Image (cartoon, rainbow, N blue to C red; front, side, top):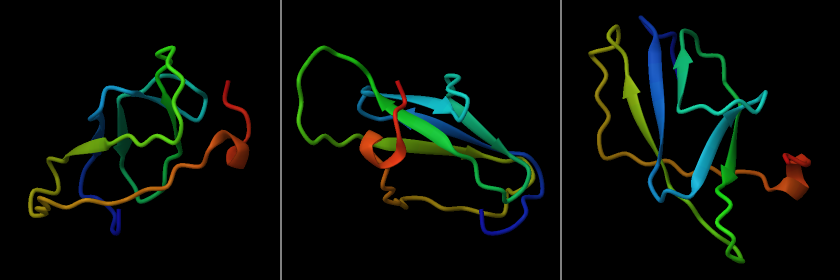
Length: 94
């Protein structure tokens, strides 16, 4: 967020390809993030184990944002690209 929210902001994490799992930094499963400041939050994104050997792979993550206090902000049709570090870049997440 680029400014302090006027109220709590909830960001739902949506796996658009049904191939991803989301975890907080303590590796607890999560489906959303809650913000009341501009402090960043770290999440882990893992591929679901489907037993199929695959090479380089992409997944899409959607975001549904809700905030009762920030009703003046409207952003539709926007997209952002995030690079998620691989296990070799970040360490082992098993």
